[in-house]
Amino acid sequence: MVEPELEIRERNEAGEVTATYIQSRLAEHKGTSRVDIVIVIATEEDRLWLAELVERVGVGDASASPTAALLLSVLQESMGRIATILFAHKLGTSLEPECKMYRLAADVFNDTAMVLDCLSPAFPKVFRVLLLSLSSVLRALCGVAAGSSKASLSAHFAKWGNLGELNAKDSSQETIISLMGMLVGSLVVSHITTPFATWSSLILLLSIHLATNHAAVRAVSMHTLNRQRANIVFSTLLDKGVVLTPQDVSKQERIFEWDGALRWCSGDHIGKCLIGVELKVLLNLLGGETHEQTGAVRGLKFSLTRLFQIFEHEEYVLFYDHRRRKAVIVLKEGISAVSQLKAWAQALMLVKEQEKVTSAGKLEAQLNSTLKDISGRFDDDIKRLKVAGWDVDVAALETLSGSRITV
Image (cartoon, rainbow, N blue to C red; front, side, top):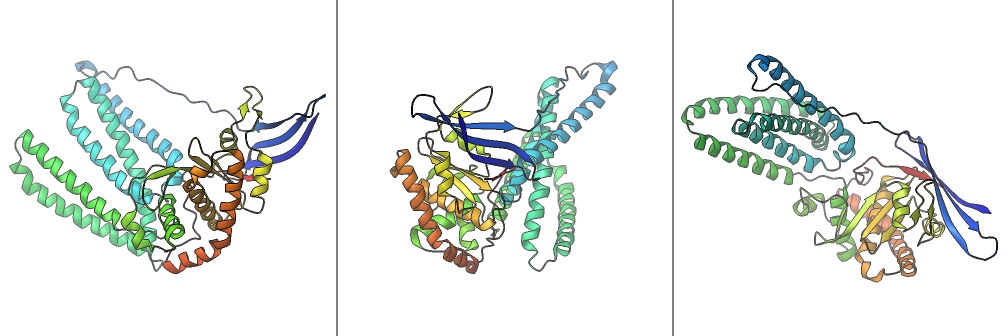
């Protein structure tokens, strides 16, 4: 006989129900043994992906050269547009929280595309097509990353709400710099007559370009707490009781950081945390066995009901796998930005004490103790963060399209 015990509905960002999870107790006829079952009812439709293979473009055939040039142009344009769509779909959510990283990444994409264009004449015609297509993809990625990160940085610098004025002046500065570059280039290009001089000048200018942009990005002090800045701020606060300002954190944060990495006081990597994940990610971490046909999960190593009881009065559910050094945070519907920061702070504290978490029983005690510690001090910590200049009302921890659950 199946006894329903817990029902959880998962919604996407549009508020549509994407899955329903039902936990029940299966009572056997003779014994007292009971087995946990979680049934997943998926409501999403399957997606069909179509791909076309371009076998020939007619390069090298004199009679087909106009057609080949047209096909090559169409191929480059198509790959660039497809890359734009896929990049925005896959990483669109992370562009604003990680605007500093993507601003510099856009320059790397653009400079790499420029190098590939210069290298293409040295390769056979087939490889030349591949290089030019890859160059088009990189330029498309540069456009998405640069445009989105620039919008976020512009909003950051528009302190008085003068975003339009800031963009107008920024465009004027870019125009002046472009004119100066054209003038200097016209004077210098006549003195570059050998391939060695060409490549030496190119590498030198690209190096200066990336170095100056790296310095410019590092100089920006963002006031929102993304994953990396939350690691630095909360670890320092929990360890030393000191609240760092945005200017202090900008000197410590890395431009390129592993997704979901947990670090204590900007030190070594101590674990990984995923926030806003689907409930099935949590179920997989709980160690259950999934039925191939029904999707039911049986034999959970940690009681799902007990886990939800621990976080009954919170807007999130946190679990940590000691063996994988991985924490996951499932968010409940209507969660606030402050509660997301609280969930991340607890995950950071929990992973820091990972050597004490070696069994399910100790893990339950650790979940309770860290939740009690964070809850007892978090309101005061948030007030101190606001005084230090942090904007805690903006959610900047999720880097992928998240989901929410209702219990």
